[in-house]
Length: 493
Image (cartoon, rainbow, N blue to C red; front, side, top):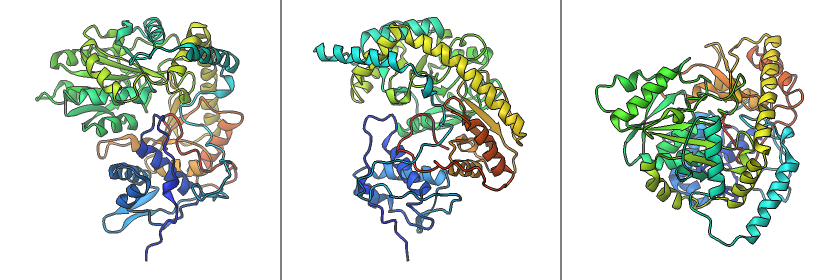
């Protein structure tokens, strides 16, 4: 006899303004119920058809959420048997399950070492509050309908910033302000599907970029990554035309951290020009280079306008802002504007004005300089703590970015290690889940270091040592438990 969940899923509230699509919000909601013990081992989740009808979403939304839960090994799924919650170690039951009618709004503490999140203690809150109040007064006085591409002042400031710091020179007409970097990727996927049925992606690579392209009907063609970034052998030596699009993170490859070599950058641009192809450059955290200024973006070398450049303010300021931008080749502007018109229109104008004032007031650059120095110190301290602990992991000093990749011995299961670290209250990513090609994965952990506070580094290292050495769980973080349904940033373990 099946053991059913008894959870009223109909109480889930989807965040319509979130960067995260509904399937990810549903995945996070169910994941957290499993983590806090509200959904126990052996429980059958509703069928995808039943749950879709209960919560009022498309069945594919539920299927995608269930597939992600199965990928993470939270559930087992088999034809004829349904979807069952797996037995997981070190789970802590909270006092009240979400959706049970409890009036309490108390939440468990978020996971420590939150992945790729900024340091909130050093955010210039007084300056931000002043600019926000000023933007609110502007919004009250304004009556004109904002432009679809975003407010002109912010688009001009983006152009000036990219020209000065990323080597990308563009006119403001080519800039669209988006609701975060993820929307920029999704707009690119919507537009490029008109030109190609396939797209090259890095392997390992950023999962949400893949999902954006898969959701738009693309077939994904994986390209391996080495110390010089994505390998282009399969692109340059292919006997047939192959895909006419590629999505990559050239300045700081996610998740391995390599920088695409100049030779490969030029080869890639030549490829795009020769086959009438398009390149999506996800420049998610390139501001944080710790030796000298950030390198010129791939789009800065692109004289033929074959690169769609996607950027965000989330990594410097806060993911909660949901303000990003995309620099579009002129030939694709009509298609991008049409896609954005049916997406979110002009977007969050109040936040756009606030960010614009924050930049014009000099606060953005000052904050970037301060956090760049701060994160370098944090990186060095984290690596020293890992060395002092003498952990059985291989780690390279990352020259830029907001995360460190720890390579494990092949005898270790990175997904199991990640799951146990989450149970102990730390957020990490399993490297192997970011691979697409069968048999190509390595075992490792991707760990954010910028949001760490207090003794987080020491506690993380000692807990990881306990997991890797099968040691006694003596340092479990008491705040481990269910997070909010949607955690901003690149945050899946």
